[in-house]
Length: 459
Image (cartoon, rainbow, N blue to C red; front, side):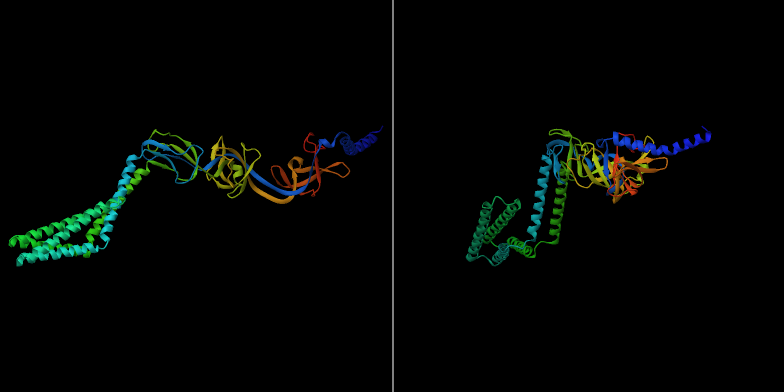
């Protein structure tokens, strides 16, 4: 056989080899590959997204350790770990008997000072004015009687005035005895003052009667004149009302009582531990009867609404995300459950660990869920790009040829054969990728999960 003829035969064999191989392998597939071994996927439209994933732990929005501001012995603990509380709720209390007594006394002192000013501002009672006018008339009558001599009629009149004064005193004492026991102490003090004034008028009437019964002299006239001046001054005081000096002294007394009450309230408040915000009690480090020091943490309170996930994102991926992006969170303790979230804040300064720079990224759960608890480990997927209504193909069905940077899929043909088809990919997600060209909706793709590689025919 000549060399030329040998070369011609060899060339024909080389050119025909791919066709022979394809026919052989197609027959081999039809004969040895069963439908049960294959997986099919019908190309359809849907949404595809590109995400940055990171791992972190769930944290509370606020986590504080509370303490008393004064030393003391624990009298009451009202909460246990796991209890929910509202802002302002009393959590615990120290023994506060002395502080509470001081507060009550300060409150009573303030009420007394306010009532004393109120008495000053009240208009004079008509009975008091009449009594003062009678005192003036009595003093003047006594002076005139001493100066002009005393007649039996004068003495009789003085005796009548004494009887009237005694009757007024008796009425005042009777009102004091019959007073309602439920009134404030200031009310009884006012009744006692009325008794004293009535007794004073009785004494004046008695002295006037005694003076009329004694011989006339200059000393008696002087005393009678002084009583006139005193009676007139009392009448003018009742009609004029309180002076500015009296009002000022009453205001100062009220202010001083208020300061004492505020100080007593602050001392009492220091014996009570109050929730500064609504949340959940995480830990209680005290018990009834124990001594606590000021500033020592005795209770941990966390605000679990909203819960915040803090993850560490690599410096390579950090440029792809921004605040406000949507995210999905999956917890290790809750497999199969996906929680929607929103990216809230990206740290400005990164941290280094083993030479890798990462940034803290915090995100909040869109909806509260009782199953999510502080401290749970979670993986967050932050959606950086998304396309809707595009042709989708699972990444499992795609073969990437690194030599020519092209993608291929196996398309099921109507005659039962399979054809490897080149496709152009768009956005590539974690599980699905966008197909820009090379496929139509309704095309059926196939893979042999037990075969070598993604392509049923190799490649």
